Length: 186
Length: 208
Image 1: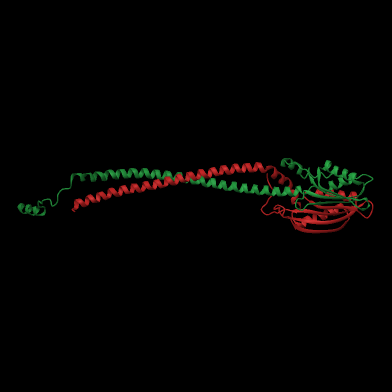
Image 2: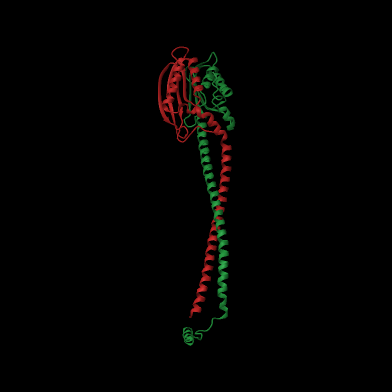
């Protein structure tokens, strides 16, 4: 092989190197075009998912509007006795304001299974003896002032005097779970 | 002098015969090919680079849109969860409220239903632990008899919409009648109507 042959080989290699560079650049372009295509598909998928979720959310909002409105109305009343101590104080205040004769009273916090919003209640077991009208008026006042209170037991018997009645009752005041909850907005 | 110089110059470059055979004529294409491939490589490389940059911009744009969509999706999912949780809490609240119907109106209704000749010895209302909407109603009538009982139960049904179930009646010594039944309020099914009725301002109609 002489110098002329070597020169030809060298020129051939130069041509090959140029072609190789072009092929490399093209493959990079193809890879990027493929990435762009994938990104476009992914973006379309994500947009579709957003549309589906938005539709579901709108439907959920519409479906639960009434019940959430219900909660918005009742929440302040249910939160009146936000702690056990507060619940006890509320009942004590009502007894004092009503002026009914209390024979006994016992307060116990107790669980309220199956209800995550109201996991606990303050249970008050009370016994009164007083005038019939006064006692029943007071009971009505309790239910009006604390509409969320649940009277789970109520027993009315004759009192010691003719117009007196003995009222044995159990009141349960809800203690709302505040974990991760705020005043609902509808 | 001149002849000497000529001789020296001749010695520096003497006529020499070719040592190898000339290359085939076809290989003249090589330099032409080099120039052409060089120009083509430049042109194509420029074109491909431009397309590469364009595709990269496009990819970045799509990725940005995907990221924005995912952020929006996360926000919607969070809102969805929050509403689902709130609806669950509302259901729990409704369960509680439905089991907290006022008792005073029941007591008053029963007492008012008594005739002047009748006498009530004992009156009891006890909520069912599993379903607080059910109230176990017990009553002992000293005098008045079954007609008084019918009157009282009838007034509970017509006046307060309570229906008695599993009613039991027992005649005791001295003419006393012991009556027990499970009272269930007949409520409306539409939550929108319930909602209005359940408003604390409107619902507890604490009639005296």
